[in-house]
Length: 234
Image (cartoon, rainbow, N blue to C red; front, side, top):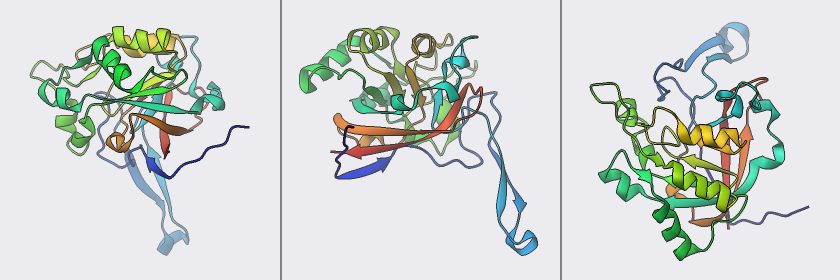
């Protein structure tokens, strides 16, 4: 069996609480007391939330009628190396930034080939808006959302040419908000690739070398689920 050595680790997931940003139209997170120590003698709360709340994974069933549900994803796919492409400076200038293929090639010139089997994380800096949902979604007067993501061209290169296991972002989506066809998500899920959104603390990861362990909530038949993500640093 492979062994894992590390110097420290980081949690890359947001805590769930009422008021966190959820996709427009999705159910908001609601948390209420079900039992209280002073009344029932034990403490227990009731949760009401959508499958795509907080830091989460999209399963193929999210878009595909015969796609794998979240409880059908093989556990061995949930431990994998991480690659981080830092574009937060560009995203601060252009909220509609779509990662161009040249940026991927520039990363490879500096750090080497994107490792096969890795999760490629886009560091956009968008997590700084997490506590301000209006800024996080960044909608305009016509209801269009403005946040950054991968271009379909770069997604294809990373999956088909590099053999990446999936893509992730510290923003609300994997494609820019203006892409209402969800082209990158659909492309990934049609290939059973991993698709994760709303990560945090990505700025603390190295460009490569970290190992991720994704804790997946096994919702039977689920279209996705909240996750925990531990990053083990070399």
